[in-house]
Length: 495
Image (cartoon, rainbow, N blue to C red; front, side):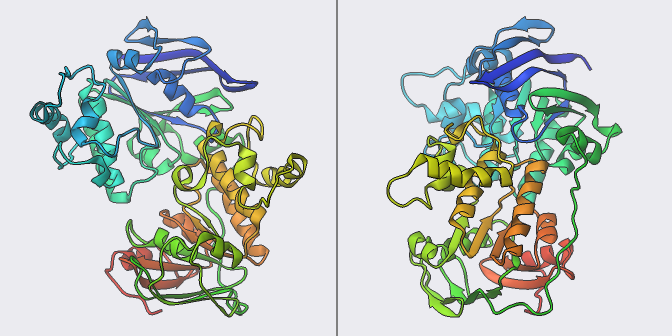
């Protein structure tokens, strides 16, 4: 296949830290090309440089064999290059059609909003991505999978011949991801090229032709996906052997008395949920999108009003009516969306870590003495602890958020998809910390959309279906098939 894009000797430095050092990438027409690497390896930086949202310090880019200068996103758009970010850059309070046409060189804007013209322009691209929604519907009304298709339709409406996708399935259900893969396959058949940034090996081997691996800002290798293995790519990414599986946990024969007892818990989403959590136990929480996993964490942390039932901590009645009350009870919550619900993106790494534990005036020397061991324990990488947390990769942002709760040291911690959208190396660090929390006698509730993760990390697995408890499995007896059957309501399991 003829070459569509080639990037050569791309370097980018932030302060004294290199994000890219002489990196390069070659993408053929009609190719799906994976871009792999641990968090902080430079994947997103390289994608943003090609898309014009970041300026490189040095290097050259060729498009269809000719050297090009991509100084901003409009330069990229003129060439036919589009990007879909992990955190979608859509306007939720505008319509689907408005999001597609705003700033779009292919749509000639007038002095007023002409919805009929917008609908006529958007119809073909919405059909092409298989989004059965009208152009006048608000983006805020869409589930994340359909919003992802809006971003893809916007790129196609700009006549994009190369689309960069940064972790496009990190927030999607399996069904929504499968629909996205179908659309990507159709785009490939029509000659559109895709640069696919992902940590999910099953996706890479399902849809990609070649994979380029970055490590510490440098290109390590480019491999034909059909001629390699997940294990080989992981070795290239991390520079060492790394097990992606682990020994399953099994419930101890005699658990101590419950640390947390939840009886018939009912909220606006949950109905009659009952379970115990013991010291030293990791209780997995499974369920399809909308089943109530996150809502369980919100109820325990005082974010959702409890309408019925009882919560007891160490045998005493507990009433977590606010996050402050929950923290006084020894309950912590690591939320699913680290950027919207967890981190203050303009504050420093250190400030984000200490904000929940600080009392009154903050002494920097004491703060640094407290956080340094935590960052070493988490293998958190940052240019400096005073750098804004927004400057960190996604995996290191997640570690900064986890460090906050390690510093607070609650007895009960609810981890809501803690490894979502991060690389295999960072996942291993987080799995290790989960094990350390359990070994220290903490009670851990682990909500996850990835069943292998739950099977690996949990002693028992609670399955939710439409807000109700559908099953409780011991890790030794659980399988992905059993969990999915319970989560989908196909079968009930004795509790």
